[in-house]
Length: 314
Image (cartoon, rainbow, N blue to C red; front, side, top):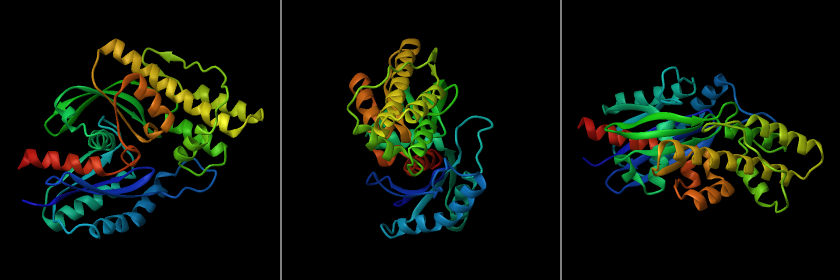
């Protein structure tokens, strides 16, 4: 049967939908950031739900302007992570729309976690879907999560186990808090990346407190605030924040490899699209990185997981 798989993801940052055509291997991805007021570091869940309700119909309509393939199945992200108690009201919008579309079209409906979608999108973008057949490590580094996962194959997706993570702030929270302090629009990742690249001077020494393979980010926020208040250039503050994150992920990677052994490494999530961080980690560890469009929140991986689950049930 010809047709495409519809993926829907309604995170706390972005309204996303995507169509995956398994015959051609192509993905059509559409998304729109949730608007956040200047000087704010995010949205209340009630506001995110309201904005998704407004934005999702148009996002799905945009997909239809690029293909007339029938829909074979629908998959929506239902929670931030695949662990008990992981919940965020924003995902209810995508779930409700996804289940409604599947009922109307009389096609199967599946769910997955937002995190699983990120991992699958990274594998697709990096042309590394073959890794699904073997164990690998996946770093999911974003505003809501900073974790290293041990990923093992499963017929309907992934089995994931957290083996390292942050003990306080997430890396993306550091990016956005520093960016908002520097008067950037939320989310601040792309703008902070550009500003950090423009700094070529020296930085204060960076020491990332570690507990095994776990790390801390709260001290970096305090240091960035002190540098900014002391009158140091914005470019320096931006570069310090990014360099701190790079060193933290480097330290986590090294400790994970030491404790658990060598495996392929996949770096996913919005923070992993940062130019400086990506270059440093690639040089030292290789690894698989998604292109920026597939690193930030998107529904491409969700659509691919829908196709995988549907192939099992056929």
